[in-house]
Image 1 (cartoon, rainbow, N blue to C red):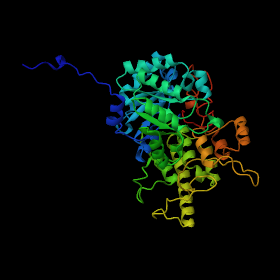
Image 2 (cartoon, one colour):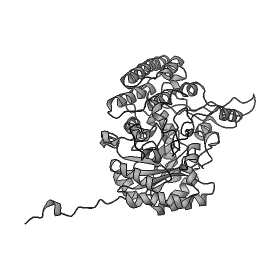
Image 3 (cartoon, rainbow, N blue to C red):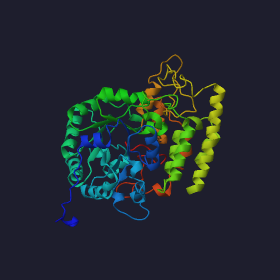
Image 4 (cartoon, rainbow, N blue to C red):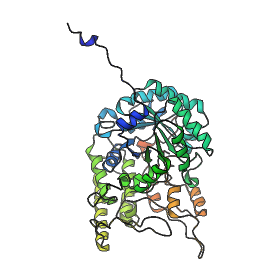
Length: 472
């Protein structure tokens, strides 16, 4: 006689190890979209997966705000699984990232999302002032007992793995011990950003790949590398040097989502660089197709970044984009009109130059001897690079433009005081798209997110109240 269904033993869900997560769920993916405040939202994750990204993170979510609840809770608006799109079939594999310093609140927040993601990540890498005031991110790096408890409480109580993203110390041996402590606490994947906590803004410098390699050699869990990539071929170079299992890109990927296309698989029908206006229109189509609302500041931020090469020349379109403040269908219609006009003008310029997108040589760009950068035409999506201050006649440049771009990866906009420092160091941030987006990218919907954990302090970290910035 059969046993009643309710009497059957229920199989307990077995939590995956880091390698099981990486190999079975992530399919040994090499190209990861990193967590970016106000920018790695659902439509962008969908677009990124179309162009070679395999795994994506949500934007960093403030634990203190997230668990507080409320109808106008902006942290909750970052991830809305109830609409069955965030964390849905088209949004996997997915890692939800949190930032906070309270183990119990962190667990409460993580339990709310564990059924809608493949892993939960803890941010130990944010070096900005908001993280200092809120006591999270890279400003926990000297509190190893707390970090251990934050990781371990998730490792012990979640049904999905916990992962961690962190920055290095100046002392590589300390970095190694730091990573090993996180591994011991239960972190199943470690993402190592090769910069220290003090390397930010005008002091960013270059990421240290040797530190990432040291971490990879010292732990048994998968390691993702982060830092110093502008082009798709740089990813393979980084992975070969560091031995890391995958590369996570943040800021460069926002300007060129095709950075994840495998250089070995590109062809005339699948070129490594795409029209930025076409990518912008494709992004808008995704935004419009979803039931999940997209923050207007996210949309505008993406359009400014994607079309930056064209906007620097078509200043009337840049001005119109900056002034457009509508919402909903009217917002999408206004943005689409600007993007379509941009596409037409870029096609005009390409035709006038004689550039043939179907030619085998179309994407074999010369290298600028002075900058070390590819000479990519302005109608294609490409890395965002600030122009260095011209040196006095007869004096060589102290820093290549590519080094400048890498040094400032993840640091987009500066205050007036910071600009003066940068000018003194021969690194001048662009002014045109900085001022146009200074106020437009701030909206009432994002004001609560732009605060400390207690919800009372103004955020000047992830975008210093001007423009979204990567979380690390």
